[in-house]
Length: 628
Ligand SMILES: [Zn+2]
Image 1 (cartoon, rainbow, N blue to C red):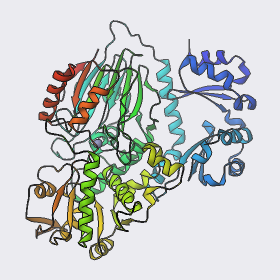
Image 2 (cartoon, helix red, strand yellow):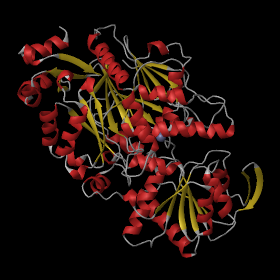
Image 3 (cartoon, rainbow, N blue to C red):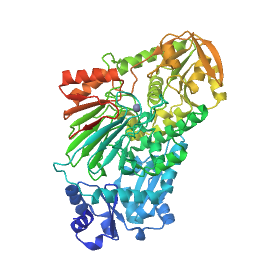
Image 4 (cartoon, rainbow, N blue to C red):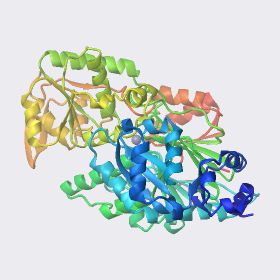
């Protein structure tokens, strides 16, 4: 029977239900009965328990209080400490979204939501307002709400498809995966998961370091963009999401699922890609309209919530510990027929901002695991050792009156280092040494202030309970202009964080050129340095370098010390990968390795076969695998 009819029957009294709608796999019951709107737990809870679906009761839009009046009423009910900044009303969904400084002041008492519902009829949702001004968060939210009608229809139609398609898990049913990108290589991650009725793409990355072959192999015969049902993105690094706007350019008209921080940071990085390629006149893979189209189709998932994304594929996101909002993707295919865990990039150790990756799942038969540091020698020092080493460098340099330049990627390590410096200052190990946060790093940090829920317990508690965000420390100085950079260079000791991480462009190169001839300064490389980059040359001991500054090539002597620190990586090192294979519960039957150079994948494959006795494969790009 039709699930809408079933639910109506389970509710019993037909006068209680005016309509039932799907929002993806959530079921929304609209009612004209105000009493049922606020007191429905006894009736709804047993249905939720049998159907194992999220069910929400909202007031029929025809009975909602007028928006202007409702706004006044809501402002009276919501505690002042929550500080309302804006309210968005979506009448067709009966939802008022409150953008507030402190959502926890509302969610603490369920009474607030109930009282608002009782007085105005509106159901509420909350969004956190950025502590640091963020144009990108503003633009995304405005974009989403101005397309509310489109998005409602999208969610309804995905739901209709999920609930109205029949499928049989019989002896003809199958599950396959195709390696479209990121296999035996790092870059352009893309995995196609297919069943007789669904096609789901997990990650859609580009390889920014390979301009000749940057995109996933969507020319694979099994890939048909018109039959693609859903895309799921693990995290916001371009090698996992840079191809997404291209899918919309090629006519994809389906949903893209991710966490909210991933959606926001990836949009920022897509825009950054456009402005960087504008400057270098590189051929652009997508344009701004494609990014906007992608946002219209974006649907946010919360970690640990089970959501059907197609009739026979159920997705749950699990913390991966890599960067803010980064998730492992668990796919339950064919109602438990086969369970896949795709790790994406993951860190199996705690960091300053994040908890280590989850290791316990209901069921996992196939584990697809990243292998970036899977080589036999890829053992990094512990976080603690790395942090102590870094502190010593900083201290020594500052005492000499020098500056410490740390070239970083936009997301992850920069914020980790910010929190380290904040802690050193708070405990008095450093006295008011400014931390210069250059350019877009600040924009990413602003997004970090919107999502403390995604951080580790300690940082989360500081922000949510004590309203004391470490990112608001006075030591952080935002720098954007040439003039401000000059001021930093002529000023006293400082820690300077700037992109790019490999010194192959961006403000980090400018700082380096101005600092490298003075031996009181230091440069600390904390990320992987690709072949042919200035960072790699420095690691290899270059004493003279040529740097392109605004189009003119200039020569510099490298007099400052160059340090490399491995332990801050957002990836698991070989020891952590080994430990993950030991710890993961339940133990998978098959291991598929991706996201690593060929030699590292082969080394890790040997280890897993010999020591974990697990069937291990390392597909090549365009290989397809029947999982069951
Ligand atoms: Zn990554």
